[in-house]
Image 1 (tube, rainbow, N blue to C red):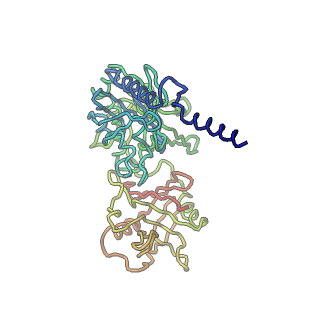
Image 2 (spheres, rainbow, N blue to C red):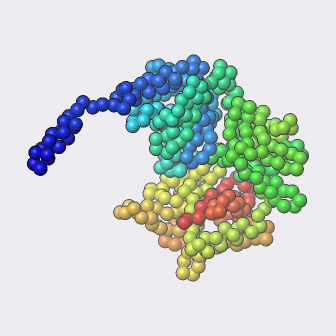
Amino acid sequence: MKNKLFILLLIVFALSCKKEEYVFDQSPDQRLNEALTKYQAALTSSPTGWKATVEPRAGGVYHYYFQFNSENRVFMFSDFDTTTARIRGESSYRLKALQQPSLIFDTYSYLHLLADPDAAVNGGSYGEGLSSDFEFTFENASEDSIVLTGRVNRTKLKLEKGTQADLDAWQNGVWLSILSFLNIQKIEHYFRRLTLGGNTYEIAVDPVGRIIRFQWVSGGILQTFTTGFSFSSNGVVLDSPLVNGSQTIETLSDFSWNQVAQTLQLSSGGLNGSITGAAAPLRVDLQAPQRWWQQAVTADSYWFSPQGFSTTGATDLFDIRSLDRYYYFIYWPGFSVDSDDLFAPIFLNETNDGLELQYGAAPEPGFTGDGKVIFDYLGMYGSYPSSGPALQSLQQLLIPEGYYLVQTGAATYDMVSAKDAKTWISWRLAQ
């Protein structure tokens, strides 16, 4: 038995000492290096570059145009905004074996704008941006297309070989002209009105998520249609067409912005139209203010807004985020034992990771028959500042004209000044 065991151990030892053999003709490292060489050649094979689409995890579709050279430099345009569509950007890139062949954009570029954790850069979430990537693994590649996936957020990056005409559309300002559609965000009023072919629509655009919402009145009933959109060299393309009786809207194009008149001229389906500001909603939601207030009461919760009051061009109108350890502003219906409401900034506790209330105001909401909420001042909690962003926010809340409430989601509302619709605050229900 001992002899048999000794022979068995010799066999195992001999097998373990055999030279490593590969199922393939090459080692894994050799195959990875060969794949990297192949992908490098593919990226640089198109002298006119690559059309690209990027789909961040936060939503939306962004278009890019890349030109890779053999010195590991990449030149690019993007429809992120009018600057990236006008000025050619430059970055370095490299290919590396990170378990899989990977393409890494390793200096800050237009692609990094989507992933920047500062929400002020891209309109995304603080700490995450738009949950996009700048390191990608290759999924597949052919002569005319390459598909990659982000290593962290699984962002989809698709490249399609471009033509000289595709490149010229960026270099000659065609895409810049199309992105003038974003001037709609420069209209001072919260409410924006599209007039096209005798029809009037209220139009709201989310340039970050690339979502557009139309509202119109038909048969005395407010109709709502929401769809995604994307830019193309031919205009703004709706993911799904809007159908309103005999009118169908699939694309918007031929934009012309008049800053003085605050008007965006455009065309669609052979018709000329325009987008202008409005001081009131197309149809007031008469129950929205009471519904907004009651929803927080029913949920035993409160509404919060990280940036406080906004206006066109200033998402933080009173610079509330400049307050030391500021976290967000809240409105809490029925906060106190006397059921008084609370309007206050909330701060990070300096000794732990919790939140703290340092001071606040007690407003009393009044709901009007024409669909507004008007706040009266009852008093304060603690010592409310006599100047600065917190006081300015409170003064804004107490304007005598009151506010319209616009429901933007199951647990989100925008509260819009009924004075002129040029100031608003976006509320989200704390879960």
